[in-house]
Length: 357
Figure 1 (cartoon, helix red, strand yellow):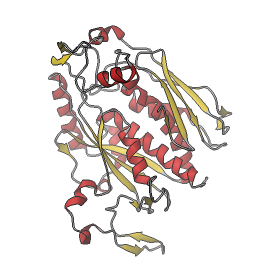
Figure 2 (spheres, helix red, strand yellow):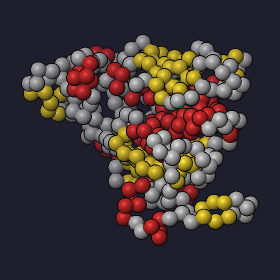
Figure 3 (cartoon, one colour):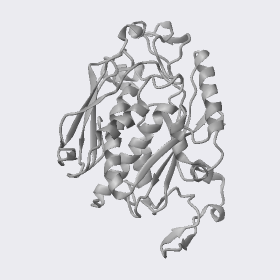
Figure 4 (cartoon, one colour):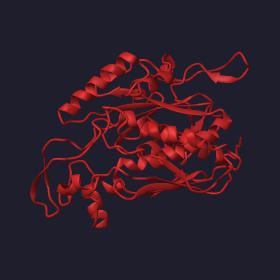
């Protein structure tokens, strides 16, 4: 599938080394102020070449809105957009034409379709996530009308991890360093680790923590379309993601119910709330009014700048060594992608509940 969402829908197209990537966003209510500078800023957070921790590919990722906007506001019709590819070095991938790279989608795509684009991974490339960031930026502009915010930050790289909950940090600090971590000391250590594995021709993974603030109670469905199930599917659809947990997550398996239950209380304004948020803002598949807190685990990038054994398309032993420009760690550039998928998920549920700004 190339389409995400039910009422708010993003459909994307394009390949890493094609002429362009782009998409169509449908379902944005009419009259929403469309801040094109904000959309571009979101893309700039994801684009390659932004620091020494990322790939050196030099794409500007300038988005062109083609439809659905008139005099700065949404018309309610589909918003089409395009991002042109300008700095692709296809020749760097010629040695990969007839071999299957370890832990890539080369083999599975070849078996499914009988053909594959070996240039930068084609459709499987994480370059496609730039389109998700555009969709997410548009969703954020609508959510702003509701007072809802989706944010994320790098909470772990390799074995370097933050030990405190998100409420202990000023999350705006995450945008002041290249790793996008709200703890300066941890960010420096993470950056040093990424630089180290880069010099070794290796890669490293980590975890991004996401938070959706301001959601009303009751979003989601109680059985097959639980809020956290749909959110998890959105996150697991991001390149290199191998794990998703919400609230206490896997730690809940070793806890007692007496310690994990979120006890209800009434706050100073007279509203029912909970003393803790081990549920991560979702109970029974429905949002409960607390912040939705989740974590997304990213594997190390599969492209290594070192020799690895593999087989070719005839099944014969071969040696592969990647060339070109690649991320030693996807975490810094994946933060805005996680935010985008969270924002689109939240907006889709809001529209399904017929809650408009």
